[in-house]
Image 1 (cartoon, rainbow, N blue to C red):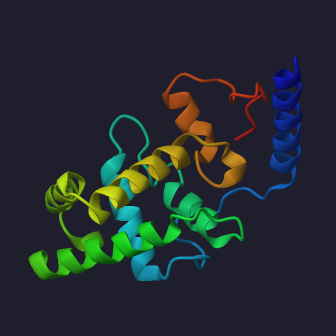
Image 2 (spheres, helix red, strand yellow):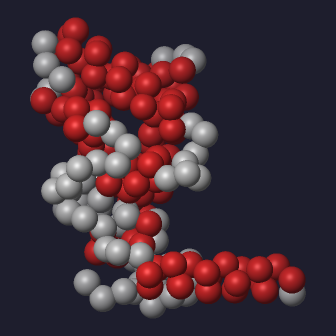
Length: 172
């Protein structure tokens, strides 16, 4: 019973926060809060390769890069923000070395190959990949008030009409 009360209280707090939060800004239309422009471009390209657009929206369509930028900019940012930032820098350096261009400008096939190698490596690259993948999926399916899941399209993609707390979908 106490667990249910805690869950209901948490949902009510999220509902109040969602009502007060401004809608997520469109992709790259504003200055980024945490990532400099070049790092943001690499982050956005990497997220898009992890969750690419096909018949369903991709990471960029869902606002995942903006979600991560917003999440990492706040005072409560996760302790692993530096893992992602350093991993993004390594990814871009390696793309420039191999392809003579930034990761964000490399062809999708080259981006996929490089991300696949990073995923298979031991140590800090593998940790980076795991954090980036988890954060990409989190941004795709989170409460839209947090800056991802733009237009609740992530929820619709998996057949959900409401968030886990039972809040009705917000209007588009």
